[in-house]
Length: 91
Image 1 (cartoon, helix red, strand yellow):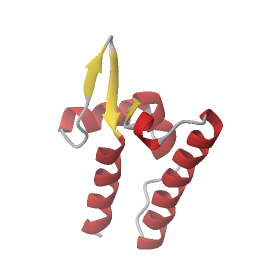
Image 2: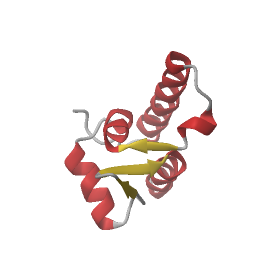
Image 3: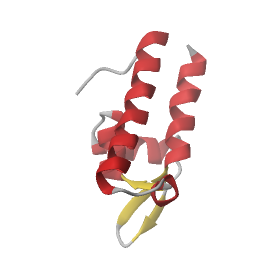
């Protein structure tokens, strides 16, 4: 697992990779952004390169809003982007 970005350049690169991963997922599945409004915990882990426990900590701290359906947690893509940008703005 990679370390959390600390410099502006590292954050910009991380954001770029998240956007690239989303685009690649869209191309592979031939779906639209409207179909990808929500992402599950596994998707968040892959996009942010963090563990499921880290995502659970984001939920517990209120840093990342979620919805629980059928025993699975779902997150808004826009909230993930906002969380990244909020941390980026602090630096």
